[in-house]
Image (cartoon, rainbow, N blue to C red; front, top):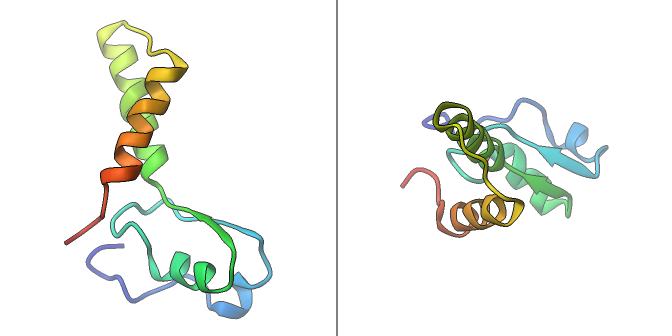
Length: 87
């Protein structure tokens, strides 16, 4: 995780055993772990969706409002398209 972006919790031989990889880290958007997975053709996802989902749920609780599924998807898509991680 930023700033230690050159580390992976496991090496390529472990990553190669799985089809799907999830890294709760969202900064950088593509960690070394996910980068190795991408290079091996694995399906990968970072922690941005979880971060945004938790923020949405917090607003729902504290503001006593509910987001529709379309609103949630719109917010998620906005961050997916605009988040680049650390610069």
